[in-house]
Image (cartoon, rainbow, N blue to C red; front, side, top):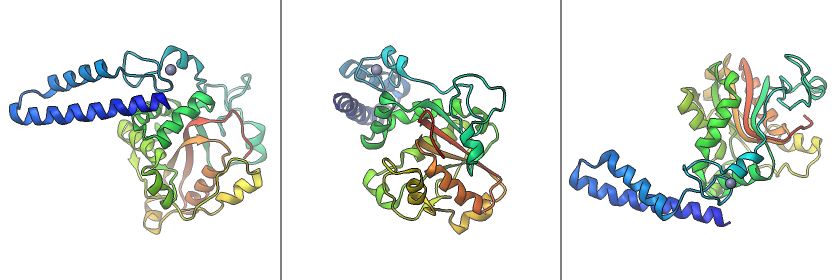
Amino acid sequence: MKFIAQKSLRKKISASLEAITCSVSAATSNLGTGASLGINVVRDWIVPPTCLMCDAIVVQPGGCCSKCWGTIRFVARPYCEVLGSPFSYDMGQGAVCADAIANPPPFNRARAAVLYDDPIRRLISGLKYSDRLDVAPWIAKWMARAGRQLIEENPIVIPVPLYKTRLLTRRFNQSAEIARTICKDKNLEYRPQALKRIRKTKQQVGLSRQERAQNVSGVFIVPPEYGAELKGKSILLIDDVLTTGATVSSAAKALNRVGVASVDVLTFARVESFDM
Ligand SMILES: [Zn+2]
């Protein structure tokens, strides 16, 4: 895609300019902040910053153009206190949806920053498959805002892990990148190794509710060395998208088995409603 190629070019130019400045700095020692400002000006002049979601030119790197901004549907109250699914009208404080009552999930609360639609899907694909790690801080910022109430309780943060072979092909876990940024910004404990995916699973897309649950059933474990540390603690699970709820439910069950006090779920995007 054109905008991904442009961003990658921008990254390469930044890296080359930084390498040049490092050599110059070594020789002159006093360049510091001025040199870095200079790099940004030169880079923005050669390849202007583009919108996070399309190829429109924006003033500040890491921002959205007004057109894309207008398409983002942020998740805001009123929503179900448990599943975080948006309500079309306010049913009063603490209202819980019928799905959460019929099938109580193994986590306390799920929260998300935005609804999952085409522009957001493109943004997440960029992060997952095109090494667009520069969008992670932006995503983390919006997630921290959506999950402020959960973060204030000072939980231990655990990203939903990838299976080891998938991690090798993708080279990084997008949920871990987001979780790490949130922990750094909010000064939370980050434990990416405290949950492990022990086998490969099929894609959840296209599976029935029962098949989805079976596909991820028993796929997560807490390694024995983390059991004692997590016992009695509040956990915040981080994932990029909440589509069916099956994956985070399976992960929450593994955490509940070692006696954590509670599990909350924070994702960047979520589908408007889903069956648990
Ligand atoms: Zn845009």
